[in-house]
Each structure stands twice: as structure tokens, then as C-alpha cells.
Length: 460
Ligand code: URP
Ligand code: ZN
Ligand code: ZN
Image (cartoon, rainbow, N blue to C red; front, side, top):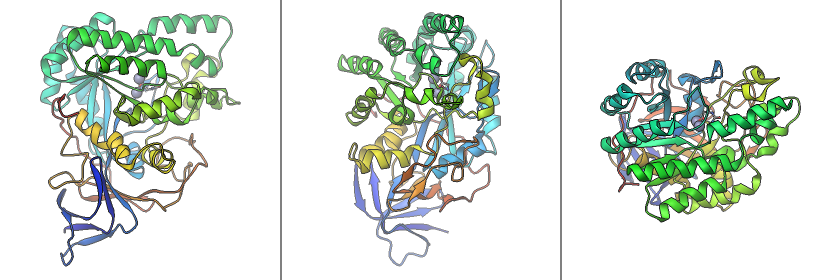
């Protein structure tokens, strides 16, 4: 049966227009007026009809600090859909040296038959030996066209600069995109050891031992390595002005450097880590939350295309999991729960409060991400032939964040009690309604793995 989304205002990154959307099966069959067409009607009067948001930075069931992030592909993608996100690109982690295939298989197995919206993978390389570098080609054949390296977390996830360079060189040959977590891992380790030796064990010391300069230094170094290798680079979770300025400087000299920030760096600050009774642990992520003085700069970086994506870095841990670091902040699992909040928060504080246009919010939550990560024009746009991944966003559907409205598998909500004027009413994934007025109506397994195309520098 065909569907018509009727009476709304379609907002693409390229502009807005009043039109209906005709869906045939999984794809968009028409944009215009379809009076008299026999189809199931979804009433969108008074609503904005948006391309489904894409979250290019999530961690479902991610191993970290002896535990795993608490959302799996079932609960995490329910929360995604409830927040208007119809596709995630999650991180598969290389779990063993000498190759990538078994790790990809492991992550594919976890997501299969579990997800409610479509998903892809970036492959995070933690040991860039010869077989691994060779296997990057095999990942491309599987539709995994972006890689990630960590300059942080020594002895766990971090790669040395020579390994990083080898990944960049191979990526240039393959036409893929390298993503990087920029923090100076060894220098931070020194600061952490010193703090602990001085008895400084509270969550706030997580932030104090990871200063902005450590992120900015690593960002500049990563960009220089990419520039030398002639490979494009995407800097993940840019948290502060000094790091963003490294990207801006690189782009102004013609380097293909791109980046994202995450909602927590716009809406939270280092002061959250000082919350009493160990509640600050809920806000422990890396890079850490910063002084709020950085936030206007990050908003402007999104507005002026210095940064191309707003993501979540969704990596939730329950209070019990966070308590692993009760006596030692360095043992608190790193990550925040935010996948459900991104689009509504960007609409409320971006569009309604006049910081960003509607079209820019669509771009940085969907279209630009689709282009950067090889999903466009199948996703990221409402147009004929695209997947019918669509959000009916009702600007008058009041929503209050909290554990009672959250689909995330975590026992608190960092935005508990925050009220929004509008929120998603219906979310469709490939023509199927996943989220309808507060309820998830799909079964696990609706979401499918998406093969992504190679990075196209002229598309972004
Ligand atoms: O604290 C964070 N960001 N946790 C997830 C892992 C990472 O570094 O992205
Ligand atoms: Zn990271
Ligand atoms: Zn992350």
C-alpha cells in the first residue's frame, strides 16, 4: 500500500516548500500534490516534514573499561527513531591485531535482527599492522568506507603516529575517509597519574586532566599528518574553540579537514562534572565537557560550515556502571546518553532560539552527513528515488525529556525535566512507520545494514 504524507512543509537542506510526499514501498515516489491518489494518509498539517536524521557517531554495546555501553542495537535504535534519527553509523572496533574481518563480522552479528532503523559501520583501527592495513580494502568491499583512529586511551585503543600515518596513506589510495579522536593520550596519562597520586579521585578530575590544549595539539598534529598524506580527515567530537580553530586554519589553507561537534558540548559544561553524590560521573566523556565560554564559538562553527555535522557520540552507561570509578575517576566508563535528544534539541535551541536556520539544521543532522559518509542521495534528502526515511516534526508537540519518555537503556536522563515546544510525531524508515506518537511500532530487525559509497570530496 502506498502512503502519502499530506499537508506539511517539506524542509530539505536546499530549501522548504509546502508539498505532499508519496511513498511507494520503501522509497519516495513523488513530491507534490496527490489528491485523489489511493494511499494511506499520514496527516502532517502544521508539521515540518524532514529527511530522517543520521547520527554518524554512536557506540552500541561498546566495550569500555571492563563493561559495555548499555544500549544495544535494539534499544539504541528505538531511541534513535523516537528522536527522529533513521540511520546511524556506529563504530565497529578492531578487537584483534592482524586484520579487520572478524571484528566486522562480530559487529554485524550484534546488529543483525536487532535494529529498528538502518545502520552502517565505521571500522576503528586499534592496531595498524600490515594485515590490518591490507584488510582496509576488504572493508570497502563490504560497504565500510570510513575508518577511525584514536590518539587517546593509551594501551587500549590508541595508535601511534606511525600507525596513524599508515592508515591515512592507505585511505588515500582507497578513497575512504579517516576519522580521528584527537587528544594527546600519553600527556593526559601523565596528568591522570599525577592527579591520582595527589588523591584527586572525583569525576571533576577527569575534565581537569584532559585540558583543551591536549585536544588542540592532537587536532593540529592529526591534520598535519593527513595533509602530508594527502588524505581527507574528519575530526570527531570537537569540544572547544582551540581545536575548532585548528580545523578552520587547515580548511583555509585548502586541507580537506572536516569535523563534528556533539550536542553535549553545546548544552553541557565542565560544571556538570562537579554535581554532588557522584552524579558528575554521568557527564564523564572524552574529550570532556568544557567551559561554557566555548559554546557560542561551536554554534557559529556549525552555522558557518566550519563543522559539518552535529552528532551525539551516544555511549550510555548506567549509574551502576559509572560507579566502577567511584574511587578513581579514570575508571569511570566514558560516554553520555544522547541519541534521542539531538534533533529536538537542535530544533528548540537552534531553530526556535534563532541560532540556525531550519535548512541548516537539516543539513548538519542529515544531508551533509549523508554526503560525507557515502549515503547520499539514497538518504539525507526528501526527493524522488530516495529511501523514505522521513520525520514528521510537529512544532507544537510538547515533549519533556526524562526516563519516562526515554527509550534509552539507562536509568537517568541527563536532560531530565527539560521541556521542548516541538518534537517528532512520526518517524518512518524506508516507508515503514517506526515511531508513532510516543510508541515504537516496529519489531527488532526492521533496520538493515547499509553499504556506503566511497568518500566524494566534491559532494561535501
Ligand atoms: O567518552 C566517549 N566519547 N566515549 C566513547 C568513546 C569515544 O571516545 O568516542
Ligand atoms: Zn572518541
Ligand atoms: Zn565516540
